[in-house]
Length: 358
Image (tube, rainbow, N blue to C red):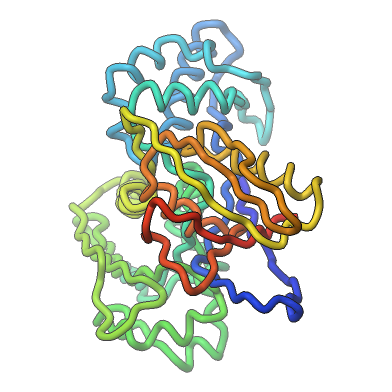
């Protein structure tokens, strides 16, 4: 899985209309793919591995393991080949892996039929400031750390399709913050030092390891917050003996929070909305925009209402609500809303956007 950040280095000095950048989200790829360790290429082992693989990609696309208890999902897990695009084997470092790629359209259709929330591929980025007190030493965990917890954290976050960043911890950063700032949750010390990472959320977490096991205390903050900065999520874990389970819990808490915030829910009565794009300068760009919108999980169909000059008006049929669409577009790095409009404005009014895609 890879994260694709859209670098919008476009000079628009000739445009008189202003547009608002609202998110630093990245586009997460590989949501229908995974790999499973196997001991052989036997039919029975492949069948079990495919069931496990389907469960993994379902959680990737929903953000929550609770989805796996849905009756429609449970029935689908019995017959994973119905959603399979292809599989292959890879022998790497004397380990045999089953590489699995499911059909994305069938997978999304399954989730819609199950009426479970779907987490779009454009997802917020989190910067994790982690204080780690172990029996050996005390430290702030950095991106280059060889600490086993960091390696597990990166791997599990990738498996769960959760974009995270750890700080570089260069001399400049270490001169601005300390481990005590994390332990005391002194959030006001972190926005400035975190600016260069261009993230959506800041995580301050204290991790302890002793003879009893591993435990974390976590607080989550928006990277940009007016007034007094307050945590939007506070979590304290149980004590884990297994570091793998410990990291799984930490990542799952973040993934479930974000999926609850940004997922779209299928509604019984489909809704329609009209939106307007400006600076659409060619037929090719218009087609690319329609194709891009069509692949969003919330959108059932896209229809051109009007194409006049550089203005393109589209009618969208939605699987979710117009509020869900607002959240999806707000997170999309390829789309900008005209700055003098509200995302949650009058649903009957056409809203004006700028298409930033290639």
